[in-house]
Image (cartoon, rainbow, N blue to C red; front, side, top):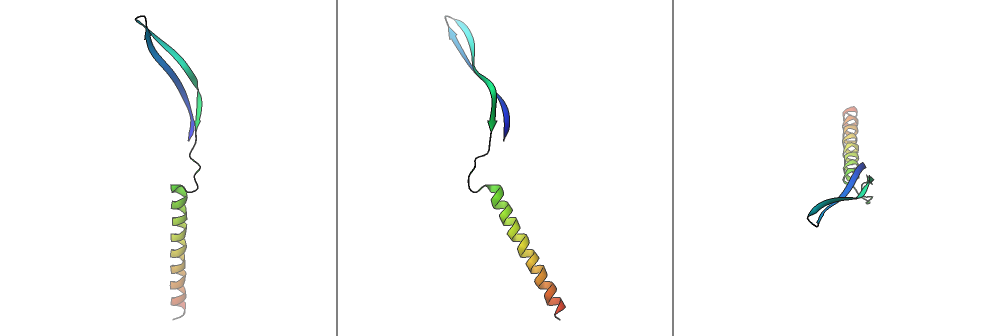
Length: 68
């Protein structure tokens, strides 16, 4: 996403002469699609679940070591 300069030009020939005509010269803004699920959000949720699971296993191991 970001802003970009866009120039639209038509090149044509009439009566054996070549002409250029600019029909758009301005700035456009490109944005990401606003879908419900993005690759980034799926990755972050999966990473959060994995880290929570690893933390749970570590805590479970610590409890097991303390109860011996």
